Amino acid sequence: MLVWTLLDRMTPPMFLALRDLVFARGRFLLMAVVIVMMALMMVLLTGLSSGLVDRNISGIRALPITHLAFEYDDKPTWSNSMVERAMWEGWADRPGVMTSTQLGNTMFNARTSKDEPVTLALWGMEPGSFIDPGADAGQAIGGDPYGVVVSRMLVAENDVEIGDTIVLDRVLTELKVVGLLDAHNNIAHTPIVYAPFRLWAEASYGPPGGPPEGESLPDILYDFATVVALQLEETTDIAAVDEELFTVALDKPMSFVASTGYKAERDSVRINQGFLLVIATLIIGAFFSIWTIQRTQEIGLIKALGASTGYLVRDALGQVSLLLAVAVTCGVGIGYGLGDLIVERTDIPYVIDIRAMLISGALVIGGGLVGAVLAVRRIARIDPIIALGQLR
Image (cartoon, rainbow, N blue to C red; front, side):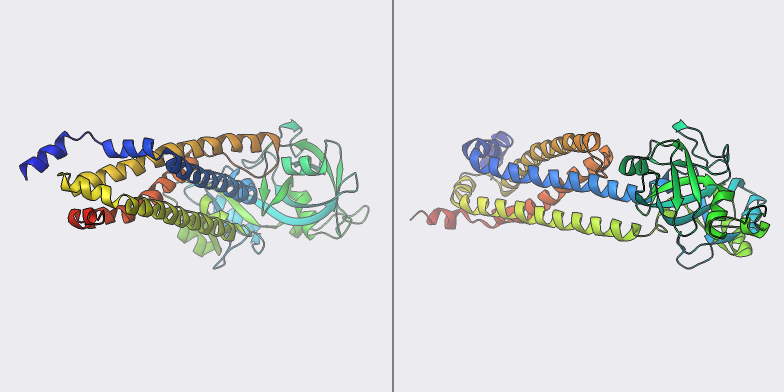
């Protein structure tokens, strides 16, 4: 026992692992390429999923809010919520409410000045309010009663410019483009057009073509919106206000779920990532299981010479960890470079998130280690006498 312990301590760490990596470099290189591809797929899938989700809720994410108050419903959504003036004015008067304003949302089919059909989300808000995005080019809303600010997707896909008009189908309301935003501000994958609240209300609830000449629309038309945008202090008694005003206030991340398709998209991507991790675990586990079987006689000989099972297991796991670390680093690096090219040269929805990339790489390493641990358990069961007897 003393001799075995001394041999175990005198053997350099990962001596066998490094020797195998050099001796069977072709096999390990092939395995490394497979791991690189898995890490690359995880990174690209993460970037594409983040981009897909961002195209769904980027407009909501861009709002400088802490909460959104919807009309009371078990599952509130942007498409079925309608709040009244008493609700948004009621929220404004409550303790802990730093600022609030109404926000209208309506989906429209429309046509541009170039007679191109478009689908847009018309957002109505008070000009100059805390949710007014301003404009990166041209003017913000408010100067022209029919002036609107359009976001990047509408500009990129439909060649919309300042001075163009957009005519809403059915209601025939004409919107004049006075400003542009550089951001992809969308909701439910639909580009947002920012308009003065009164213009939104007239387009959403007014008669087609607006009021008859010389007449004005009734004031009750402007007493309805979709949600109440809020900035709340942490001490605000949200439940009490909701109960009193018949609303349901959701914090910003929870309000994402109210956007059509958001939850389904997020869950689908997570399922795909889960399957990819399972595949990585199985492939890496299978590789090292076969590799261990091929080395059965060698491991038996080393055990007979006095190496402990613990040393051999640590050596094997060190070999796996080194291979995984190098291959996953390469995969993540390639994924970062490809993602940068996608963002710069295409309009594909893709988001470069370093933190998400690192998490994806760590998951691949974790899955690979799980598979390797299941594989190297065989080392503990190898009997030196039986292994050496296979040479006869």
